[in-house]
Length: 205
Image (cartoon, rainbow, N blue to C red; front, side, top):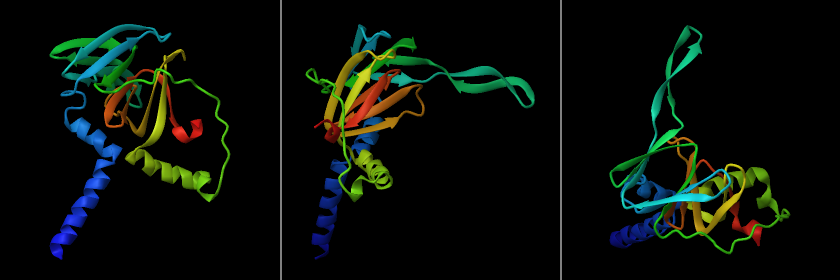
């Protein structure tokens, strides 16, 4: 009887953990954030024109901490702050970048080439659509991943590309300037310095 209970618990944990996009993101990070995965880096102008592509098997993004001269209540001094310059390491070689829109797409992640944007006209259909309840429910749904569409634009609002997935999770990177990490059906996408929307797929049907 005890063995059956243990087996049942293991099966339940396996199902829960396998379907958790948040855990997928943590596992991806344990592989070295970006290091250890094959990524394609695409660089875009402010108008959304791709001007450079880089690909490597071991890619990492690192922040740069600088000393900033500033005035405090006790007078002028220096504080440590996050620089806008990021260092991209590609198979041992470095690229310094500042201000450019960059997408880091893990191998196996493919944009939706036939996606067309549409206006959204939604209506509430019951108690569960109450904003207070929906905010709490959606917070947990985001951690486990849900069907969503990601629309990415340049810094001036020009369309770049779109992605969709059945299990989409996102998190804002605390240690990287202006960077958001998404997990789309188990594949990582880092968005650096770009406008984007993450839309529940139910709003587009």
